Amino acid sequence: MLFAGAVAGLVWYVASGVKVRAGWQNGESPLARYLDGKRRAAFNRQLPEALATMSNALRAGFSISQAFDSVVEQGEPPVSEEFAILQRQLRIGMGFEEALESLAQRVGSEDLTLVTTAILVSRKTGGNVTEIFDRISETIRGRQKVERKVKSLTAQGRLQGVIVSAMPLFLGAVMTAIKPKLMIPFLTSSAGVLSVAGMLALIAVGWLMIRKIICIDV
Image 1: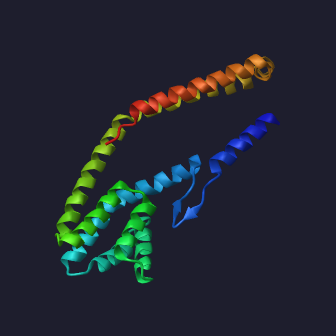
Image 2: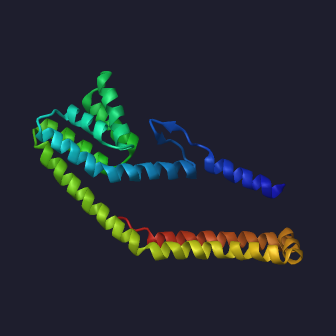
Image 3: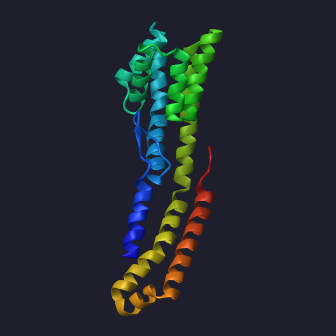
C-alpha cells in the first residue's frame, strides 16, 4: 500500500500543472516542462524556414502582415499556429508592437525574441527587413548545425548515463524474480529500505553529474 501510494503521488506530481494555453504548456511539473521544451525546439527548427518565407514575401512586394500570412499558409505547426494567433491579435485591434511582444513571451524562444526585436527596430529606423531576416536565418541555421554536432558527440555519454542509472534497478528486479525468498525480506526490512534509498540517491547524484558534463550550451 505504501509503495502504491508513493507511485500514485509521483505520477500526480509529474502530470500535475499541465495547462494548455495557446498551444503551449503552462506549468511547473516535469511533464509540463518537457512538453514545453519539445514544442519550443520544434518551433526553433522551423523558424529559419519561416524567416525565408517572410523574406521572399517582402521581396515580392508584400507587407509585413501579408508576410505573416504566408507563414500561416505555408508553414507547419507550431510556427503556423503561433503566427495565426499573432494575426488574430492584430485583427482584433492589438498594437503591432504589443502583438509581437506577446508572441515572443508566449513562445519563450531566444531566436524568436531576436527576430521580433529586429522587426521592431527596423520599423523605427527604416532598415532593410529582408536582409535582416536572411542574416538571422543564417545565424540560426549555423547555430543549430553546431548544436546537432554537439549532440552527436555527447550521445555516448548520455547512453552511458542511462545504462549506469538503470543497471542497479534492473539487477534488483532480476534478483527479486530469481530469488524472491531472499530479496523480499531484505526489501521489507529497515536496512533494505535504507539501502535502496541510498542507492536511488547515489543514482540521482551520478545522473545529475553526467548531465552537467554532457549539457553544453551553444
